[in-house]
Length: 254
Image 1 (cartoon, rainbow, N blue to C red):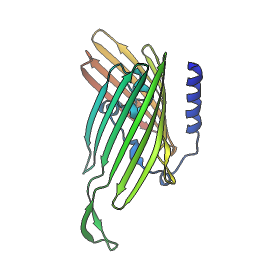
Image 2 (spheres, one colour):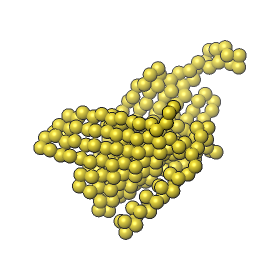
Image 3 (cartoon, rainbow, N blue to C red):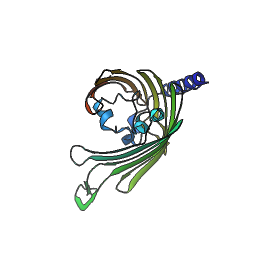
Image 4 (cartoon, rainbow, N blue to C red):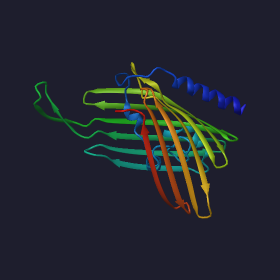
């Protein structure tokens, strides 16, 4: 039964990933791809096979099934100009099952409104995106399976767009080796698609007496046909002090 579930999920994700590439004009709510979690970002976003905290709701919902205690996460990210992101995540293991949730707010800053002639009207607007996800995961032996449902709404002056989607994930854990597969943002926003992407990753943990070494890789394919390879490393001392680094390769000339 476990093998049947695993193979079914792999086949489903592979079929979804084989869909024809979409242009940027066909995709709405690109903010759904804004990465969350300081650890995941520091490791180059190579996280689909790691996902062992509350941010698994975003990266691979199957990762929730490996948690053994409740977790909360709060983050604030200030970018250039007025852009900022706030995120709240939570996860709760319940025996063989686990639940998780995430709420993210992305502010695009303040913009001056101008009329058709290009003159200031004296008014301003603050575009934003608000997204929320609820996830559930279960584990049977070394196989974890997870599903997340999400809602996102983006507002720019008098215009807005809302979309619904789902994330599907599977993870295989055997000793120090972890394999992850996820399909994200499977859904629609009106007549537009939301930014689908598909990830396959691997991670390996080396444990020494006081030092741990985690290596991870991800291969990502977006619905626009863009391919990316992510790699990350984490060195931990007594599970208290960590040094992380990551790198991303985009297989495009532009």
